[in-house]
Length: 238
Image (spheres, one colour):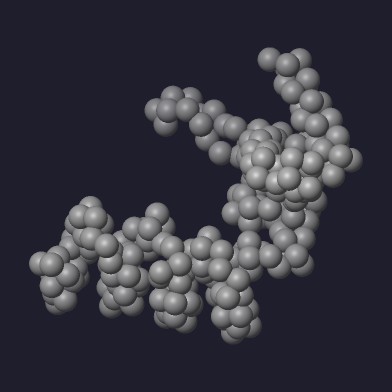
């Protein structure tokens, strides 16, 4: 296709534009082309490739993403690690772990750990969940986002500290209006609701006798009690 030829242009603006057009065409090898562009000499082209890949990555591009764990651009390395975790192939654990040992960038190391946690590393899951007890500089909301990425409903019982946190999490409403914020506890309730949907799906897919139950009754009771307490507190303050 002509767009593929334009990706060989010496002008980075032409390459970026061609890449942006390519993702709109339905070309069957778009994801593979995007992975190749992660090694482009121009930062804007690499950024475009990363942004487009976020909604188009699957197991077919896993080898290319693993290769990009050694990309000179830390933004690309971080994005590659995140997408590898989302693909969910256990064979990626070894290259992720190997890169983590040699990774000099703190933010990339964090994303490598998140990917490994999503792929099943229980120690790293516990490390991220424990940050709700002693929140890092970014606050509990960042940790909630990390746990959402890890995507393990069994961590729902660790969300209790966040359910007590009434600090601001993120801005809501129209930017031109007076700022309003969702609270950390609101974000925690939303995450628990998503966990409950995952649990329900797993239960339906099981034997029908609760064999796939992944939240213990005690854990469920504590979560329910905390959520009810938060709802009661909100009802009295509004």
